[in-house]
Picture 1 (spheres, one colour):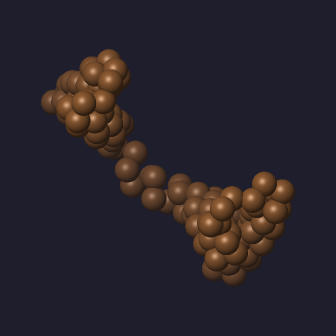
Picture 2 (cartoon, rainbow, N blue to C red):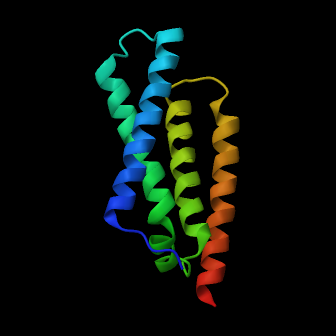
Length: 121
């Protein structure tokens, strides 16, 4: 079994941060984005390095607590949120969003039905 210490995590974060910062700087140098300065490069690299470090070391510990949760709950929440956003956009007189809003609503309903079916057992 592999053990990790805080120093391992910090070293991995530092290496990942440096690599991502260099990569983002090169991309911004080749194809500059207006208003995307050096501070944003470091913030974006730190955020991405933090997420990658979290996924590498801590994801299995945290996800093991939630394995018994029905995945339809999370999916239902996400699809319901997307459907609500599309319906609000449609009611604000945007064109053709009723089709996508209807599809999102159907998928959300299917997920909620699956969640409540499994939670009753």
